[in-house]
Amino acid sequence: MRLKGHFLNPNDAVYEDIALQTVVNHKGDFLNLLKQANYPLKTALPSETAQHATDIEIAHSTTVVAVLYRDGVMVAGDRRATAGTSIIYDRAEKVLQIDRHSVLAISGSPAIAYEIARVLEHSFQYFRRSQLQELSLEGKLRMLSRLIRDNLSMALQGIGGVIPIFALYDLNADEDDNGGKIFFYDGLGAHFENVDFATTGSGSVWIRGVLRYLSRFGDTPLSEMDQQQAAITILRLLDIASEYDAATSGYNAKVNIFPNVKVVTRSGVDTISDDDLAIWYAEAQPEQT
Amino acid sequence: MRDEPYRWIEAIQDRRDYIEDQLRPGSPVVGITYNEGMLLLTIGKGQRKIFEVHDRIALSAIGHPADIERLRMLVTDTASVQGFQNATEDVNLHRLTNYVLAHTFKQAFESIVGEAYIIKMLLAELGSTPEKNLFTAINFDGIVRTDTKFAVIGGTEVIETGMQNYLANAPADADTDLTAAIRLSLETWAVGKGLSTREPEETDLEETQMDTTQMYEVVDAAREDGEIQAGVLKITQQGTSKFRLLNSQEVEAALK
Image 1 (cartoon, rainbow over the protein chains, first blue to last red):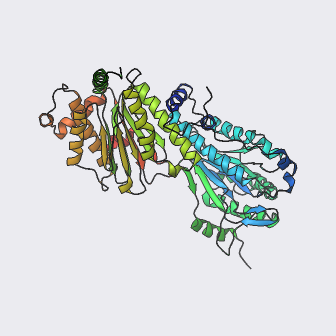
Image 2 (tube, helix red, strand yellow):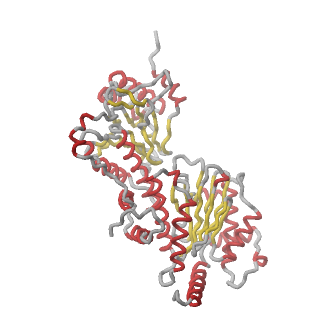
Image 3 (tube, chains in turn orange, blue):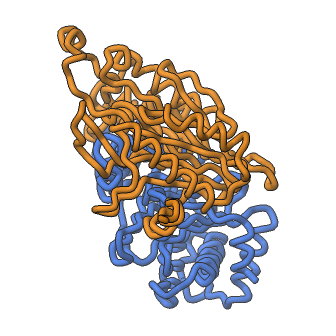
């Protein structure tokens, strides 16, 4: 039976039928539940819009970066949102907590990226609440793959592409091991695990090589850095990206806007405070001579 | 049958008696507030009885496991869709109780040719301040009771009255810590369990007053083939979801 448009009307006679069907067919699939409630998950554009897609200015471009450090994963993103050559917002949040042990760093179309993050967050919660267990690591990765793949038509039209980094902590890892994991996605939804680091967005090309150098030849490899060392490294990298990429901001000294920096460890997701970032940012700068 | 009012009323009464008989041996559930939020506690045998519904809403129930599961999913699905379509702050217990659950309970109970739900449900909603905490208890016939400080569900009205009296005489308040809240809940549970073993016609609560030692004897006996289940809605819990099941070490620590 296809149920349409009645889900939120408890006075309707089909309400109980929905409950019955939901229990019988229940797999903890939040997207399926939204379809039953007639929530439009895909945005279909009229063809004339697609033809003129290149004329539309969509805010995108950014730099987000994730590194595996001693206690887990540190994820950071600059705060700038642009449309063409205009800076339209300088306090954008690009590192989003999805659940207690996962974080999504977004680059690409903000509208789609935020919606993907929201669906992802609600999907994980719904699975936990309905199935009485956390969604597995593989299940979380596939859910994000599915959302990115479902967005393919928007990406192909050049107005809604999203390339995120997904960082999480695997609680099944041994206590002595680092359970931090970083996954990179392509536009079709394929995911690849990055062992040491991942970066995406328009500014990422300027720092990818530096990350590889630090990871392989640095005095302290990324994976052995403590939280402060990793944060200073990431702040410096975002500063470098901002020097070469107009769509990336570093630290804005005039109004004290710092990048978003979150850590994902066995104890959960934590946000590095602006106070800590201010101290570490000062240490990140070379001494003036 | 609806054309013959007497037969309909008789059928409803039979149905009420039948459901109450089924619910009487059920393990009571206690909900109280404490200094960091709200606690739901019961002692169960295998099946989980305390659930997360939404960011600030938790649920527990007594009754038939199939009915509990069906109605748990109904309220979880509804809250999840509402929270996504609007905002999570727009999901509230008042609406879920009055426009979704109570209506469903009543309809099933009074549709005497269909199956009734054998269930009593207790829900808790963590408010932005302790004064805004809310408990709702829903009877199998759809009648709703609300309270801001504590609430209980038990197999019969006598059991619930006994438990409420005990809590009223030793109320948990904003200063009660989790350890004290667990102990008070277990004592209240023991009062309810003690009353559930009596014959239905014994309604005198005075005769069944237990001292604390006897209460913990009842708890210990129940733990031989069951386990304490407790969940909290904790205001300081990191993230949007405030619900957390307590692990056995946390419960054991409260019993020392």
